[in-house]
Image 1 (spheres, rainbow, N blue to C red):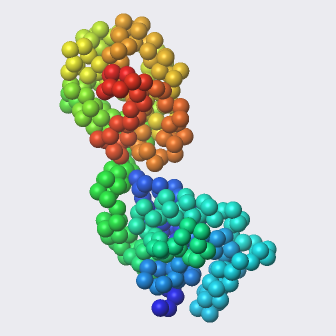
Image 2 (cartoon, rainbow, N blue to C red):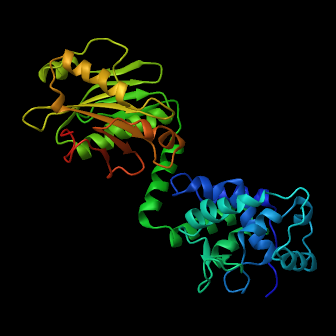
Image 3 (tube, rainbow, N blue to C red):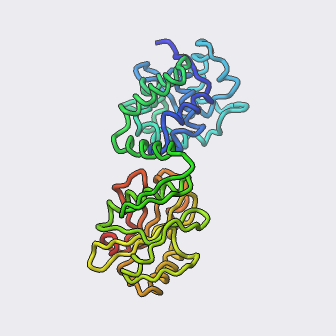
Length: 354
């Protein structure tokens, strides 16, 4: 089997962002530079399904820009053979330090590319075997054909995703893609009672819109919106009539969260404080205590109060950065997976019972 034609690793990097759009599990490590260079070396040595050739992670660390520019088959085969030898000589300007092979093997290959069907693992090898063990799935390798036009690549990438990603993964991608292309001068938010409000476009607004239009009707029995603000503390909606009907006295204070919802379904209404996180500002323990004080000041019992931090997607940097600070007895919700709810329970129960 002849060696495949090569894309420059920078072109591979660009294509990976299109193959794995936002919402793809482990996207960060499937699309970073290490992944692009790993795929380049797999193509360089011909480690593709059915070829009988396999990659060892430390081969990626041994590649250099000078060697990568030598694309004739003779040079590639010679380097492939040499890169498999146990050689402790210094390699000038190597792509990565020797100890980077663990990140290549684990973060990039095992936990990102193999789960999406992009890479296959050679069967029958012992854990300590020095033989190459990874190869590109043939369909995935075809996405890096340098002759593909942009339009052809986009079509092939979409077809590959449909075949290799499961329905849940594809749904997350679709939700995020639809929100990314919404655009316009303003975003129209439809409330549970049918009223609408215009908000400035942006990620925070996308999340707030999802909370009002998706979270509230799906997870609350009879939802109502008491308060809604957007970036800059601009009040978009405020329903004093509804607040007074459930015994809540809203005062104009800076400590109010982005959204205050009420569930009028239970015998005693449920008050739901929601913080929208595009960058920071989750409901951590200090924030939860402030919100409890607001509820208590309005004589609203804590057992009928809930706290939700809303994100666009759990693969987003904002969630990874703030998850460790989320308060116990609160919830995390993701617009890209609206049927799911993360419960940080202090004790077993359901929403409103923490």
